[in-house]
Image (tube, rainbow, N blue to C red):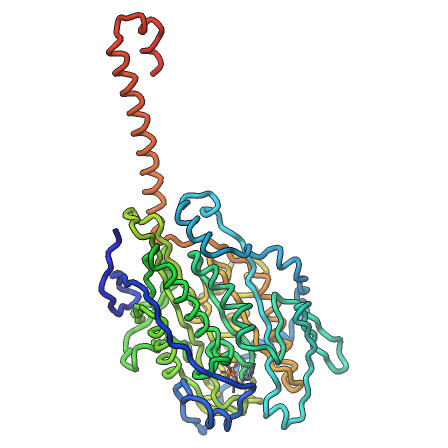
Length: 505
Ligand SMILES: Nc1ncnc2c1ncn2[C@@H]1O[C@H](COP(=O)(O)OP(=O)(O)OP(=O)(O)O)[C@@H](O)[C@H]1O
């Protein structure tokens, strides 16, 4: 019987596993509202959850590398968008979670489970409403979209319009709930079956990535994917309590200027964080705190603590612009109660990623530290674009090692993960070029094939299982032969022997 161990905060380099019994918790935030202005936020809303960096006015001449948008807009050989029925047919089937969890437990060796399932990266596009800045520039919307046809068209002056199809397309009136149902809820279905998963938000600065992933705390309607995912995950955990021991741990880090910060270290994180790869764990960060989680409330506290320490600063485009890529990772272990051999073990992780936004120095009017950050952000996003291009083209070398971000997302891009990308765009004509670039980026990403396999932790378990099966078979054969020998001995020299009872062995 698996033992319940005392929950302890761990770092990922530690081999010590802390098993805790997951329990119910409830800590829903409360929210409200459409596009929020600075004033709205000050009035209604709880304290901003990000750490602010004072605006640095010192001008430093930094030559920025081309942003992904600049790279993408120079590419004319973009692949054609696939239609949705084609995409749908490749989707992993929708599943009844309860049924499949149990059947997986009972058939740990089934052929189906050993096979890898190939699946495309799923892509959702979300266009936010026009914001105050865009309205004051008298910029109108340059997008038309059809949520039912999952189609979005960019209307371009003096140029051919561009139409794209994605797994889902959402316009300015879309609610946080709708976005979650099309993204987080679907990913959760796979996650609890034991698949690795990833949701990442990509897009230009101020396009709504943090709003989509984190949402606005204290307003139920505006909760983001992370909060909703955590609530639904714990609903599942609570339902499974009688049948399955579940252990959950979480870490929260940011990649800032190509360095890693542990957002849960309370500023004490003076460790050297390195990205490593492991056959069992996949990609992980050494020394990062992995906190055992027993309730929804505890996981929400992590979300809050992490967002409080995240690096943000004001730019011309966004008063609370994320200057880093933030990654919340939730690890889950599930094992049937009473399963002494541990063959029902499923161990997997999900990464919820809020990327920093691509930005043009001319739009953000950044100087000093902001400019340097912007250059690093663009560089890592450009590296991400290169990885996606290499995966789509099927080149033998994929430049994962070119940045922290691509190294950390290696499992999620072209690896063993059910991955969903949310591309956030501004509808404004003034941002048309950046939005088009995001759409091209998303269009390429959806062509990446990942290979899904339920993660059972130690692959040696499979071998042990096979050996135990062999042992069972051999024991049965020995028993059978012993019976026959006994029969022969008993009837030795009798008529029965003549019938050949001794030759049947
Ligand atoms: N769909 C939306 N509906 C209402 N308000 C939104 C929506 N999307 C974004 N906003 C608002 O727009 C502003 C900018 O959004 P957000 O900070 O999420 O952008 P971002 O893409 O994360 O930017 P950055 O990359 O600079 O961090 C915020 O005030 C946010 O509340």
